[in-house]
Image 1 (cartoon, rainbow, N blue to C red):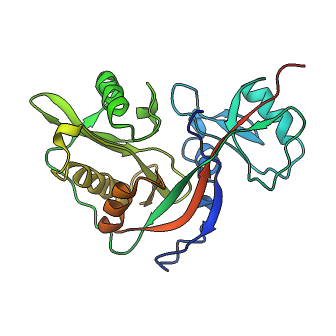
Image 2: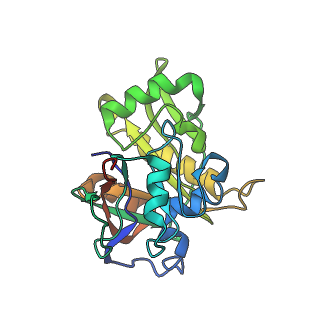
Length: 254
């Protein structure tokens, strides 16, 4: 099963009280991103959109309440194909199958989060993709594809010329930027490289620019990745909600 985000809260666990917890963009971050900052990358139409398959596995719908959404999904991804699953309260049409979910969390920044640039961090781009894919394959931070770097700014740390740690920007729901692909070579863990790169990304996210008037940082993680979650909370993130990550399979061709 591919890793896709059902954007479905399992349990409301509001944390910081900073005033950002009820932002609707965070309830459907892929849709907000695909209709906003990443609209130039989006495939689909008014009901259903996705990223190109070599950029990201994320896709989203405007609303599961629209009866036309099912045909729109098939039009976009085809028959016998995967798509993010709706909430369990949504009844699937005949022939559609829901995959097994696994739990994740959505974290958002608090007033304690203070980004800072890192002098050792280098910008990663197309020439670095083979090394980025190799590091992701070994560290398993989540999906990363040959053109994922197109989603935002990716940075890394090299030692003896070799990429040993990386992090970057993925989804960009309105007013927010998601930190993703936080990965460290196992031989270099315990040196604080991940924290340094996250704070560098946060610093950049907070800076106003032509395409973003200064965003806030958020991220997703597997619920059982407790070590990473503790690190993010220590840096200044807090739990906004628990989520289920699951896939949906469209029916076979009639």
